[in-house]
Length: 61
Image (cartoon, rainbow, N blue to C red; front, side):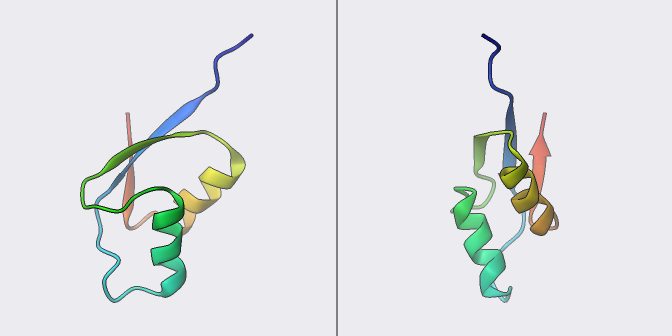
């Protein structure tokens, strides 16, 4: 059985003065603090969330 692919995401931008849906998306990704890195399963839903807040996060290698 193959291992599931993952993606690491770091929060680099602040949700202050952003739309509420952008704040909710960051929380949905599990990003609560600045420079926090989380490892998530690489699914289409997660990729869509990253795309919506691409200006607030970066994908870590």
